[in-house]
Image 1 (spheres, helix red, strand yellow):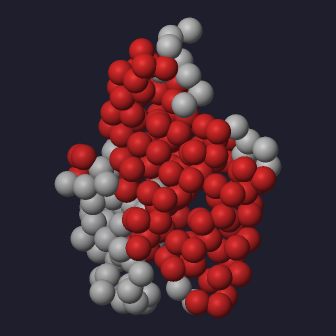
Image 2 (cartoon, helix red, strand yellow):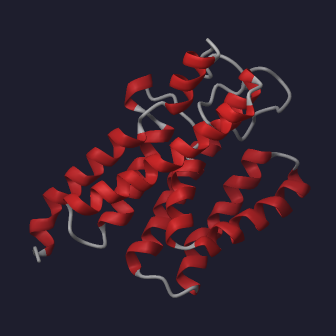
Length: 200
């Protein structure tokens, strides 16, 4: 077993590789290949499954986008854990995969909201936290009628929920830092007016 300082280069490498995996622009590739449109230019300008559905009208394409985006997170964590043999590879690789999805290198840092990527990892690690966040989001959405604001506020409970469930430090760190990154991403949609073609 490597010491804590000896692991730092391995964790750094795991983070970089996870970011590059997360940066795979699934929605852009699938939409341009099957529908001839670029999600960065239409609808919400996000590259996730919801905007793919909105601009292509093809549910199967949206589902495939969500599944691949989720798989990116799982693969990134697996590769990261192999590169850095420590439990802390989970939060490092998991967060960086989500960051890569939100701000992908390959598409000039214009990506999705990160929910599929981080959500798949948390679903694999502790499904209860996904249930808790989803329920709170539904309640907040009924009050605010604004998806991004509701999700931004709902994600606050992810870290505390993991802690209350008795999860380890690396798992709690994944929930806290991963959701913090996604909250930053969702804040860009705070003033978005739904129903219009472009972000206001």
